[in-house]
Image (tube, rainbow, N blue to C red):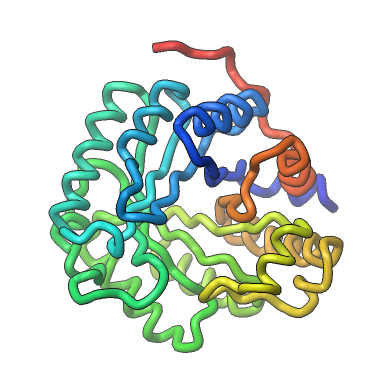
Length: 275
């Protein structure tokens, strides 16, 4: 069963967790040595030096690798102009390095300030110089509102991917994926996955994250959480959704072993490329 599921899934993306540029380099070297080629950089603070992190990735990676740099409208107060500048900068770096660079536009957690809505970014999303994705939560109480918000983001035609919030209400997920595939068949879909570890479960029991829909079964322990995670991945495979491995992060060999157990071993990495 596990082998069949791994074979049906697309190779996972890995969200990068680090505190310093040196640690970022170490993560990239360990993960590429293990065969992983696609990564995400998270924007959690207005002081995040995102383009400097992208430069580190471009130094360590090469053609065939790709990096998605998140852009939080909460932490980038100039809205559309700031996003347009980011997209142009990524396009230039991608051309110079051969690394495929893209952006995931998110609103950020907590209450949004005036001007921090996707509609204010419409100009930058109309014809972006580098690929842009937007977020979608298939577990919202008001899905009509969530669908309408997504349709507004996609109206300009410049968005190429939709990124799904993590959760385990699988009937809701299946329903929304059916709608997404019927309504926007050309879009790439990426779905979040949490690693079912003791650390993650303890974290979510103590202080659950806003908008994350987890069940009592999932929170009952690592074995149950892994079982539910495999059911989630089966839904992703059914709808050709690419997984994104998020919390609590792939930081150690033990974390990497959990990823391999869920997804199988990645393709052998090519020899190291230096540009």
